[in-house]
Amino acid sequence: MNRREFLTAAAAGLGTAYIMPSVFGAAFDTPTLTKKIQATDTVVLGKTGIKTSRLAMGTGTVGFAGGSNQTRTGKLVPLLMSGYDGGLNFFDTSDSYGSHPQVAAALKEIPRDKAVVMTKCDERDPVEAKADIDRYLRELGTDYIDICLIHCVTEGDWTTRYRGVMDVFEEAKEKGKIRAHGVSCHSIEALRAAAKSPWVEVDLVRLNPVGAHMDADADTVISVIKEMRAQGKGIVGMKILGQGAMRTRQDEAIQFALGTGVLDAFTIGAENRSEQKDLIRRVAAA
Image 1 (cartoon, helix red, strand yellow):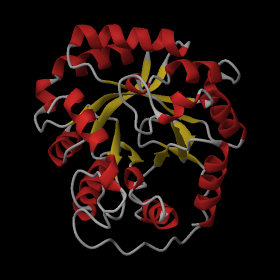
Image 2 (cartoon, rainbow, N blue to C red):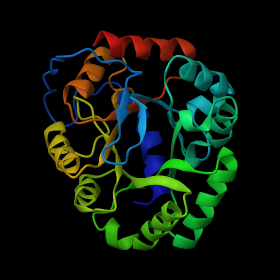
Image 3 (spheres, rainbow, N blue to C red):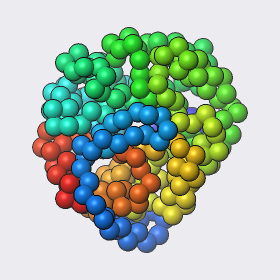
Image 4 (cartoon, helix red, strand yellow):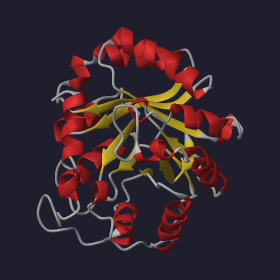
């Protein structure tokens, strides 16, 4: 399945995602947290040395074909600024979300070294990937990208199949265009390959207690993440609310994400200031 086919299937499946109590069987018991945690806590992503807020501001809810719920409202810039003013400095963007211009506008208002920008590249051709990184820098209005990921990888042999793109990312890092590179996985085979690859410095992984829109059941995914953490990879969680499947069970989902102890940070896409403030509150309440 290529990127376009994946996104089409994902968009088509949104309507059924909200009523599924579990995709892979019984839901997990929610872990009990033993210390106070805040969305605005400063965390370090593995061995990268990159320090960021625990909660990232996602900009790609139903993101595909250059748009997302956040970008379609035309109110993303003030949302990013309110999040930053509230202590969130992790900007989760992507070429396919069409959110680079809005993130660029927010970056103009704050010191660049106070923000962490993560973006994602869909290209599988090395020449196009190299051109894309340079374009991202122009679109974001910055000299460097903190984290750049190969986006939506599904193939178990991606570390050999896309070696050319990986080399492009390495070269970009050597030139100071990116600080860390990694991958966004969308299959358990791809995730396992990422765990075994020294090239992966940051992994964006799907995790929630009901298995919605995940690569495998939570037990299996967590075991692979633990392997990654043992190697010092930075782990950022996504699909924390199961792409809407846990919209009415947010506290359970957030407590699960925090209680597993395997995530350095996680991203959730608030669509307005009220949702953003509510997320910050729920993390603190967990």
